[in-house]
Image (cartoon, rainbow, N blue to C red; front, side):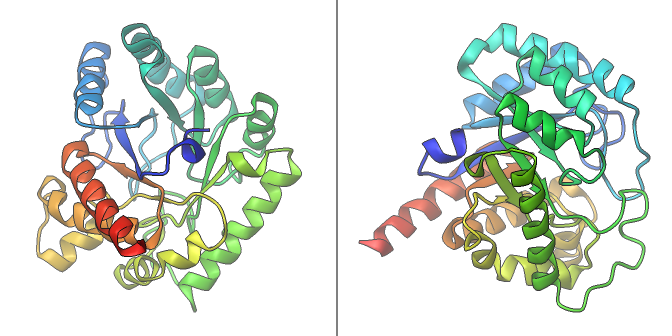
Length: 276
């Protein structure tokens, strides 16, 4: 899979075809705008395009499988027609029916923020289709996940959760080389929880699976930088990308491809020199 084929860090560009995502909701839910944005992200160095039809921002409501399919399938079809096999497509969903429709239309992998808990059939689907699946940690549902999230030892608890979901994925028949893990920055976490996770990324890498990091434009960095507009957190995001590369993180899910591609490439070059 792409996560094992490349030694260098991978950049996953975010394409939200939703009206209500926290940073770019409503910008790309028309097919033509979505295709233009994909072309831009590919030109800037994206390795993967992650397409989602349901916002998972704090406070968001769930979206039915029918509505997600209505949103994402025309976009995936148009992207595949325009770019053929030049693009790797990820479907961002927790529902097996949406994932299956996306795979049938040309998606290559599944990004599940519930790690198979919302719809266990998604694990069976990933196994049947022999595609990679990203398993992310979240405490609670998007609607309520930021209402007083609590941990005793956040790093240990998130690792324990991911180990349990890895075991579930393996039991469902998913190959070890098709599992990617994500500590779920900002998903049911306080500012200090996010900082603790970022400070211990090497412990997630040590689990032996590719790690995805998704910090892009997230609120906890705004609290540190005294910024309220997500689009003003591009530099802050790039800092976490560089730190993630040094810790061994494989994939970075971002809105701003160019800046994070540069951050990842420079950090990677520095890291390679250190290992000589």
